[in-house]
Image 1: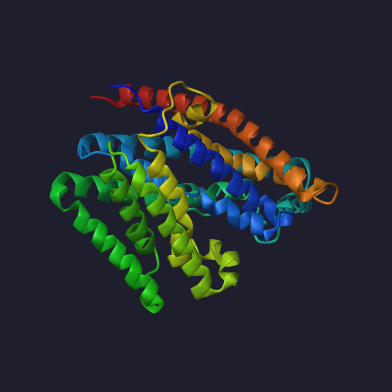
Image 2: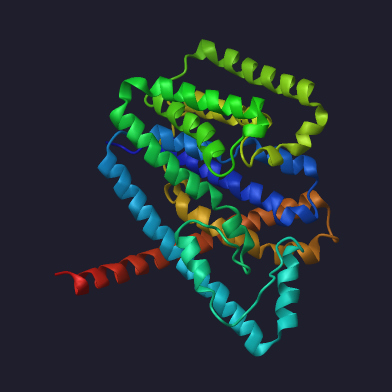
Length: 362
């Protein structure tokens, strides 16, 4: 079976969009206007959940094996991250001073500045990372700030494959339940649960709807109707909430509330409209990113942290839009380089695990 390059292309475009979002919302807080930061959310993380739904099936063994591989790759990465963060602190304390390290971390802004720097390794942080409690990595703050997606993905993949395997004739009912819960939580915000419930209620619906779209093509005559509905929803949102809601889209993302859900509709609709319609016949720059999306997702957290040290000295010396384009390009280049390095780290980590497996096998 030939690989669907449209899926790789869509994952690649979504990854590039995530890099732009993190360029705008992290180091971009110092110089990019709020309007541009909000518009960056048009193509957001919901696309990844939809693409996962399209590519997922009812094979429990295959899904769990894929999730196990992802968990091990994730653990290799955060172990590498932990020691990079620790050795940098030891380097700073040994050759410079605590004041120098605090000055270094202040580049990220007061919200992300390190509060406890020590030459004693904080092993509990590594353990928490393994278990998807994303305490901050001081030297690379964007990494853990973007990992909330991974925890939700694991939950969706497990629930999704169980539904597809054991309730294949009732998928529409589960979609209805998820959408109803999302609506109830939004109509009665006082009962909106904390934790992962709000995320899963909405994104599981996206996952299952996308799975129902698998192998299908939206009829051409329906496309204008879909975009008209999206436009109508956006008009209603600004009418009901007022124009100031535009600046609160990101606040309505964690967890997803009605304004953010409406904001996502354009990108999700576009994804489904182009599915089985846009033909990608050859591999290219974007499909390569899509094929290696997880490594680029890890890499962009590192690269988006590093570009702070370019933004801070330049932000007062050039127009914001010029700096934004420059930083975005640099961020992509760094992500490419780091992703290639992370693939090698991953390969080495798997070889070590295979060596240990052979040595401990009975």
